[in-house]
Length: 221
Image (cartoon, rainbow, N blue to C red; front, side, top):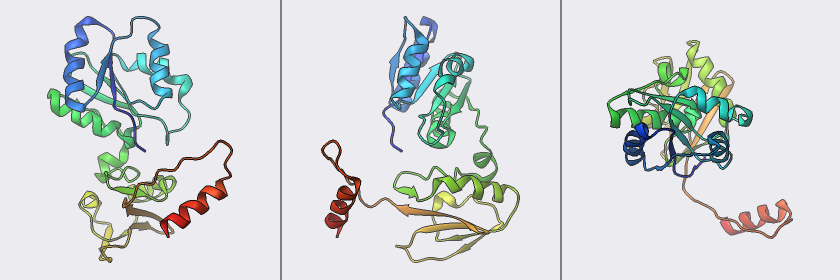
């Protein structure tokens, strides 16, 4: 899902210069809350804003713990050491945090502390396709990734560069250029499609969903 631009939060004057370097590298704004830091962090999190804290990881987690509920909708949260040596994705690793950590580490000459197994052993986050692609069934990504991590054989129908790192247990098969990319393991399959259209839809309060769905269908037809 798309997120707003990240906010880099620093809690001490000594961290300001580093915070501004990070903001310049990832296109973020900088904040230094002076009153009720935890409340400001929760507000950013609730609004879906990615948070990059130049502070201890524990500060972020203690502030945000009451808000952690849904991994599919929560924004990325990262902690960066005040000396810039380590960028740690804490939440939303497969929804932008891992990528942000790598981007920050490259800019600072530090290390991205990636801990998600899919990234480390499969070389790709199956539930986080790159821009221009979407996954039909993200809830099944964990099942497919776990099977591949166990060494089970899979089939990849179609060729895209961002899935080229998959293990040798995945057999590659050609597919029509306009067909979706399908990665199957046993009875489970992930279906990736190119994003070809963006649809904006407005409605009056209380509009029946069936009416909106019908309008969309007629418009696309």
